[in-house]
Length: 590
Image (cartoon, rainbow, N blue to C red):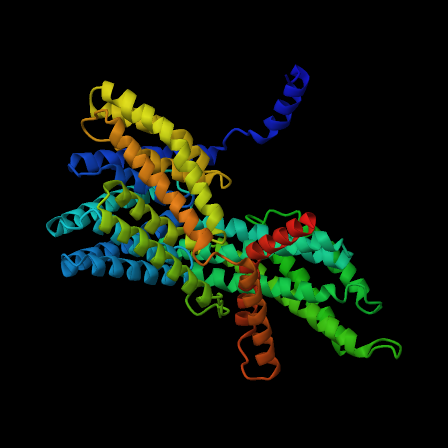
């Protein structure tokens, strides 16, 4: 039996992790829960068959930033409409041809999974929705072609209610705007770049510099998505997307120059060391500033003075004993770094302006992303095969409970295929679904049937989902908490007259959990993800680009080459980590 002292020590170690939610988390949770309740009431007043879909949609598209809600909602609506039209067409055209319907469904989901795999969020999310919406609408309507139009219309209307409610609430109720987040993250990125450059000049430990380098790549790549969200918030912010693109490109150029300077950090060149030391002092001061409000003009003047001094140094004759070529190369890279930092400061100042600059003021760099078509094809084949097998088995046996599992396999095998680690994402979703079963049973089968009126249903369901929404505000638990909210509403199925049906509840729960587990088996057995192959592909792509550059077969803009390279590095981090873990486990085993 553990002693009270040991139990107290474990509790003391756990307490620092249990922090009270921040004010922004409470705003997000209250807004999401209240908006979900409003969407549920509207769907109920319209007498929709499954009003819980309106509330589920609110929790699915809810994000801390208004632009993220608008983007996810827009592409969810677009994907749902496309999928609904495709489901109506497939059911109407195939009629009694069971095999043709199953084949068309599998091919459609494979196609949408392929498109989603080569796109990025939120466009990727819209393509996934277009795929599995056909399964959600088409499978229940199979052999009942006269119902498919009604089911498609109801599903689109339910989702539209949720999206409209979430979009209005995120924009009007204490909103956190993507534009403000963009400025904040550019400012924090500027501090991190200054810290990275300061470490490079100071010859900091390589492990510390590598960690800074990786974090910068991840954060700067994430700015591209925030740029798209800011453009959706208001037409007047469209040019902010151009300013953000300008700034992101020069942030990438700055860290490229620092990475090159690292190779020269220990050079004994006496001509540039005094200048480096003075630049280091300025960079150290830049790491201490809050760039959301800091006046950039004094810093621009300092950087411009350093640039003029470096340019003069590059033109001046060197002592005979100095490495002339190496010194010229070092000064050239230093000038590039100073120019990039100047452009980042100017871009930050422009982003903070309430009035956008006139179009054409900025010459935006070219930002390119890596598209892994071979991995997209594997994802498509896997999702298509899984959907065909489970759907075909359901059609052959007419086992009612397998229908829900078939829908879940179609959803999960396509949705999580686009994630960096599909197995981990599927397990997170499975955990949320499992955790929701018992609360959903207690609420839906024991409590709500005893309470009179829809108002009680609304109160109880909202009270259950409020802590879940608080967890969704924490990135560590967001995926599991979102799964809990979705499946809790699916299992409870709130409606006007709640009646206890334990057997039906068990059937739905078994179908959902069984479908998720089948999807796990699909990821493990059908063309399983191979992180080693991803690493090899990215490395080969790097070599091919460098070879073409050396042979002068293609001379792209420097910003295009840099953004593509950093995007590939960002995509490489997750599979490379898994490869290292496997190698470590293999070495430990041997």
